[in-house]
Image (cartoon, rainbow, N blue to C red; front, side, top):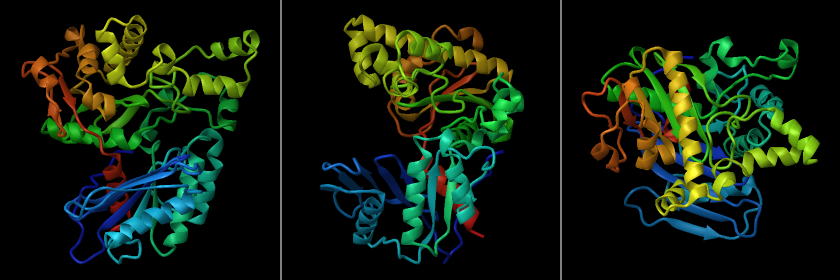
Length: 413
């Protein structure tokens, strides 16, 4: 799937607002955007759903007052979405507004069937449910958000935008694992990739930063947050990505191990007597940076590195080493690289990570200008010197805007 240009303008007089919902296991993030100018009208977060200490934080439209917070138990996602709807209504932006064109939902796993944004029907929802075994931590929460939103506005188009969709263009030799084909097919075992909305948005913005069309450039995108992934994008199409069947494969992450010898799991079962569930928790929640040094906040890790902390230094070095391996591998996959692009929380804000990841790669044409790298900015920017053969860039991601763009492009006809 080559990501289409989804940044057109809403027709005058037609509904132009899109509500974006990202329903997690215990949280709901939401943003309301006006697609006539891509402006954010309001946004919010409901967290710790189901706990006594639930909290809703709502940011009203610019100039409409201060951020509002409410605390107290919010029992479930239905109550969370209704609370969010109340906050939007208090700003005159209620879900019953005729200006609301659609609701766009982040859905983590779309399998092989869903490779484009898709209007949600009963049959589509059933297929998303069938994918729960390959995304047990994510799709159930996404489904809950969809059901609640459909109950609140059954007349409104609801669109699923899939994290896996952008990576569906990977060639079969990149997507297949080298295991028995019949077993793999029977259990949907293959590499799907994640963070697709971010990789799509950032690769397109990187091309614009270079003054070219996406079809003209090859870029390596490094989405570095608590979850982290890399992608090789050739002419606007993903040809390789670091995450696989699940978001566990690939780079070192905040709490996930990334690449690991699969026999480690057998060893832990035999020698340590650990169950499958215990190993799952170990690799997903107690590994990565937190497993190596006890912290998964890169700012704290860098503070400890600067103070000479050996565990933090080793964790940082392992993190950077894995990054360099992927940059080198994806340079080989692409053949020609026009830009390496950093994005997401760590990628956008940690100059030391960017500097360390590029250090020693001068023969690849990768150089970082120290002064440009030190600049903090919320806009896409180059941090490589003019003479560099390959551009190094920082492009802030905007997954909510990408979901809104794809949602609106689908329903605005």
